[in-house]
Structure formats: structure tokens, C-alpha cells
Amino acid sequence: MTADEAERPEEAPEAADSLEDLEDEDLDDVAFFGEALDHEALDDGGFEEDVPVGTSAAVEAFDEAVEQIFARLRGNPVADRMFYTASELGNFSILWHALAWAGATSKRGRRRAMRVSVALAVESALVNGPIKSAFNRSRPLAEHDHPHRLRQPLTSSFPSGHASAAVVAAALLSESRRRRWPIWAVASIVAASRVHVRIHHASDVVVGALVGAVIARVFKKIWPLR
Image 1: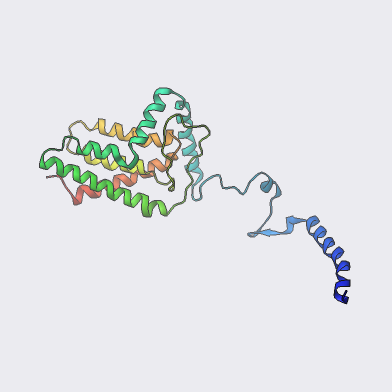
Image 2: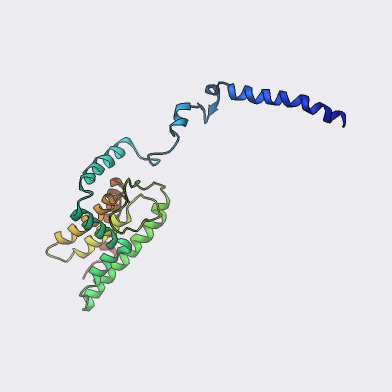
């Protein structure tokens, strides 16, 4: 045994004492990103991000108020079936493409249908691309199992692509119609369905609708009906 090896057992107790001193140290004096550690927050999971970054108190209050309204509707068989069906039909804008091309037998009709489809393609590329990529908002957590089939998206919750597509389609499809309210009623159900099925926050839907309104307005200018 060398002299160094003989000294190691004597150093071990000192290392153990150091660890005990560290465990007993008052961690309140240790800075964490410039602030003292909050032990209660750590124990209660206080560092877990419950609210998406960037939301204000007003947005949170609005989302919660709308959530309470839809909470009363959930569990109603008629409401559940309507909103879940609308949400599924809104996936990939299937409903809007179908409505645009239904009965488009004339050259004018096909041109209108093509305008809707192109506008929806642009909307999808923008919303699901750079706009959603600029935000990283978590989707609402479902407290219970979904009563009906539902596709779970993996993108950011903000903004709602269903809402933006619904407004784009409704604005263009209703442009030359005398009775516009049925189209807008369907669009409203599709947009609202995303809150009912707990895929989006209410503010996601509102902003998505605003984005859709801007896109529709641009398309009306650059591709007017003749």
C-alpha cells in the first residue's frame, strides 16, 4: 500500500462531512436566475408552466369565461355530436373544399371554387407554417375522455387553423350569395367546436378568425369575381 492510498480513508470522512454541510445549508440564500429558491413552489410544482408564455391576465380571464360556457354544454349528446362532427369535418378544410366544388359545373362556378381552394391552401401554409411556428402555446388539457372520435394535432395551439379556414371559406363562398347567414352559421360552429372539444383556447379561435378575415380580404382584392 502506498502512502497516498493510506491517506484516502482519512479523507473520506471529510468528504462526507462536506455533503452533510451542503444538505444542511440554508438554500434560501442560493440564487436561482437572480431570485432565491422557493421551496414550497418546488414541492408544489410551482415551476411548472400552467399558462402559455405570452398570455396576459385579460386573455386568461377571457379563455376561462368562455370555457365555463362550454363546460355546461359538454356531456349533452346533441351538442357533443354537433361540435365533434363539425371539428372533424373542418380537418384539412374538407368541408369547405366540398362546399366550394359542389355543383361547380360551369366555368364561372369552377373559377369560384378554385379561388376558394387556393385561398384555403394559402391560409393553411401561413397559419400552420410561420404563424404557428412563431408561437409555442400548449393546447388545453382534457379532463375527461373524448366522447367521439377526434384527431389530435401536434402543432401549436395558437392560432386556430380551423377558425381561420372557416372565415376564409365563409367570406369567399358567401360573397355572391343572397343568403349568407347559413354559410357563416356553419363557419361559426366549426370555429367554436375547437373550444368545445378542448383542442383550442377561445383566444386561439378569435385570433384565428381575424387572420382568416385578413386573408379573405386580400384574396377578394387580388382575385375578384367577374
